[in-house]
Image (cartoon, rainbow over all chains, first blue to last red; front, side, top):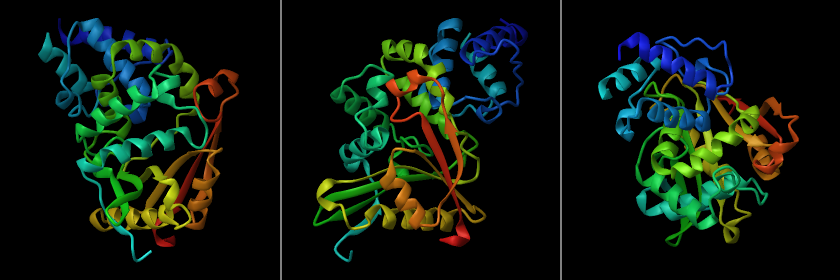
Length: 79
Length: 221
């Protein structure tokens, strides 16, 4: 799966979790850029990503992710 | 006050920190989000909160390193947490969300998914580079000693000494938590935002449908 495909799949997950069908994600985006991205939404987001990509993250890996670009890198490294 | 020792919390304090988090979450009501949102019993909530604290992840409200405790004659009397928001470039909400994802059973997360859109109405952003005051609690037998006021002043002093340039301090409190609001008002915190949800369902999950954001500038300590 290439980065474009990962982005497309991630966009669908973000739109579902944040109930916003027009949400567009960018590599530099963080939790501070998306309304309602709180701890509960983040927990759900990670769970949905793990489910959709059939991967499991370690806590240390998750705690290094600074933005969506790094999230994509981490997903890519697991596929 | 001379008899109380104020010190950094350690892993040995986790049982008291668990009670602190639980009581702060309840904000004087009987509604604990770990029960209402995740469907956990009180004992299960204690177990999972302790597991998250033992991970020793810094920089969020579930970090042992965020807490100061007050003790007297070897007995823990009070605790309060605070951290610099996003000091390592990761929002505290992400750190807490990662812990929840890692520790809680998947059935709890599935349950929370159905409720999230209701309770996220009261989300207030944590501003990067500011001091965030989190959970605080005083054991019943030690109340009346202004311990939360003392811990708040001390924790701000500690964080501002080690993080030069930080000048703003915030705390988010449910409007029903009158003792905490009064303590912060005495320390010159001012209400700068009120967030209210009109969704009647929210009261099934959270202590109140109103949350306030209080702020103070470091120079007014």
